[in-house]
Length: 103
Image 1 (cartoon, rainbow, N blue to C red):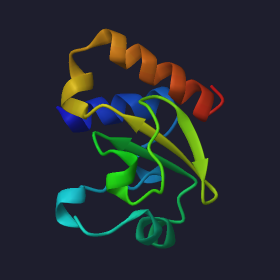
Image 2: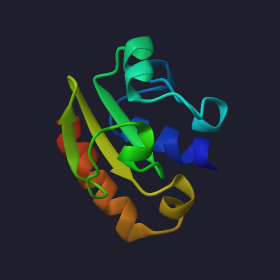
Image 3: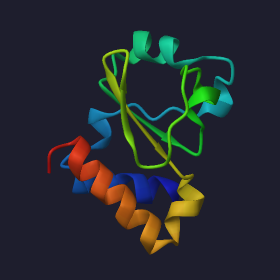
């Protein structure tokens, strides 16, 4: 279900799975943002259910706020489980994605 939700979000942003890297932090719990940015050369990072400081960022910021840092735009969102059945959260995410990707 989470992959379906992600795929639908990507399609709405005119992106596909080939345009992104989906990383499950459970497989790499000790890596911080620097390792990911070095490996993937990300310009945009979406954090689903991972607080920015837990990702190694030197600041926290609220859900749906686009935060520029280290030549990357970060967007902190509720987990995919939380988003899946909550239309209000989904609409807030969509507004942020529209701003982030200039849609």
